Length: 238
Ligand SMILES: Nc1nc2c(ncn2[C@@H]2O[C@H](COP(=O)(O)OP(=O)(O)OP(=O)(O)O)[C@@H](O)[C@H]2O)c(=O)[nH]1
Ligand SMILES: [Mg+2]
Image 1 (cartoon, rainbow, N blue to C red):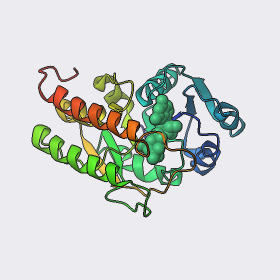
Image 2 (cartoon, rainbow, N blue to C red; image 1 turned 135 degrees about the vertical axis):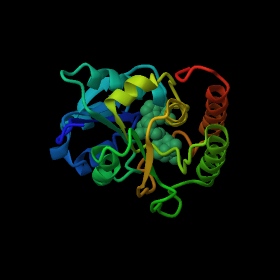
Image 3 (cartoon, rainbow, N blue to C red; image 1 turned 90 degrees about the vertical axis):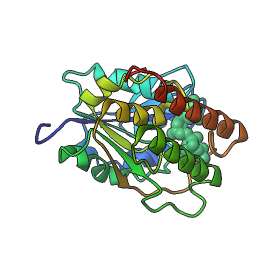
């Protein structure tokens, strides 16, 4: 890892016009090369807000959290040179963007390839992590530990990954399985995994996943399916 690594940021966003500007304002921009907001079929002007706040905006018409992250990765990977590190965080202002240095530090110290900001280890405001999210995280963590031997406390969205690790991970999930896919594949590949405590607050705007019944059922099913699927396939990448 170079002493001043190139860090790009990918922010998936579906109808987050009310929050994405705050996310962009709080990022430590001086440490970052490109900040890419992936506008996932928004109808509320998310792209305009993001552009006005200085982000690169990429449009991805196919809905889904993973689709948005994949589109962002394609964008940062097309740059010359590609980044050394990619940071992901949400557009709803639940994460604290000013904590980015903390999330990338284990990579800068060459202690980790994949770093997940854990809301369980850090401070989550009351009500920020809904009961179903806490339970889902707990269950996923138990299963990942039992099936992969990896100690995970959270499937949180705020994370940093080395670019070379991303190439090895070969991410494919197009929706709710994205975050857990990264963790279970990291375990299978023997990548160095670290967690750091991060803060978490109630989102701005309308909930799309854990605050809705449909989102909760869809995400729970997909997360469990992903954990079992990779546990019982022989290849490290599929
Ligand atoms: N649900 C959903 N989120 C998307 C999509 N594309 C991008 N996103 C973004 O992914 C992030 C996570 O979605 P959230 O709705 O915050 O999901 P969550 O954090 O599980 O739950 P809440 O914050 O309670 O809604 C946000 O920044 C969304 O704007 C999509 O197709 N579906
Ligand atoms: Mg959220």
